[in-house]
Image (spheres, helix red, strand yellow):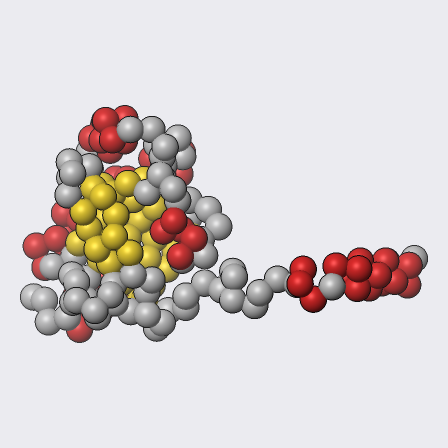
Length: 177
């Protein structure tokens, strides 16, 4: 039976030809230590936020979420706790919604969860593609120099020591006090 599957797979791949072979870098996620993808998003209220690129940015914890995502909602108190603890030391927390609904719906949801940090909007879901993310919520810590320092798939657990250690290290390296 195994020979038959191997033969079938070989025939299928040969029939597709080299043009159908996937590119090696299509789903390659940036690794910790790599340059983070540079992007800008509109925020609720009409401003914008930029990550990476040539200009130095604040140490930023980027979180991608949606209003309909249960784990995202469960994670918001932890995001707010991180913002409350580290904003005065220079951490920017940016939660980017992939909802296709309007700003008002996203703003109402974020407000109902107690968010006081910036909420970005990415209804085209481009940011997740740049980070090769496969789900939500997902979070990335980006240094002031634009390097990816930490990444986490799924909701950040309350009191998670890994994210706190990464933030502390990034803020120390950036010279924040």
